[in-house]
Length: 287
Image (cartoon, rainbow, N blue to C red; front, side, top):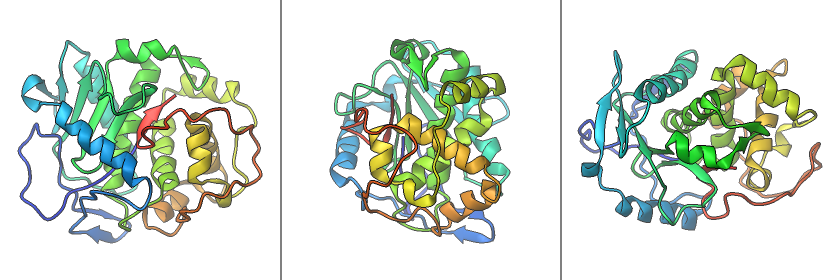
């Protein structure tokens, strides 16, 4: 589900998948975000993602520019462009509420399959080195059958696309160079659930009772890797708690919360572990 931004280099042309990240949030401005070739967490995993870039040729894609937007969509087969554009706009709408302003263009690449180097359970990925958002087609995602215990339908697919775009926008707004995995995922899951169809969100939450975090300490990389979906549900419930909300989210983006890179296993309020669904790529969405 994750990853990173643009170095002080010339802006790339629309359609390349990159967008400039000079942004502001809560009075802070990052004039020169860093293109991370590796990170403090899982450098080998990100190396695989960078290798995966070689498997995609931008020349093979048809490009669609979303109406009244600088967002574009690339697809290697017919897709519902309105759906993908709307999903991306959902992420931008969420972050606009926090006074976060990514500079565009932003390109979402819709593909029938992800590179072989990425986990077979992945449905999308944000490649931080090149700022590329890759998501599977709806038909490919439907093969997963369920996400969060709910059958995959159009509304769920839209939310999953929003999640990946949220990674791209959030990545440009972190005030620290090496945010933790849990920081990246907390922000992206909160954005996804906040913009999710209300009926679908209620269904997801009702099917996952008692999944929550008691404290910030319980949100760490190992918990995310054991079960990303439960992490996401618990993160959103934490966000909804009194005293958290956007104030906590801005603390995460400013590097004042969820900064522990350790992998300690705290007491949990949900069973763990079940499986490690994204063993080959913690930077990608997986079920």
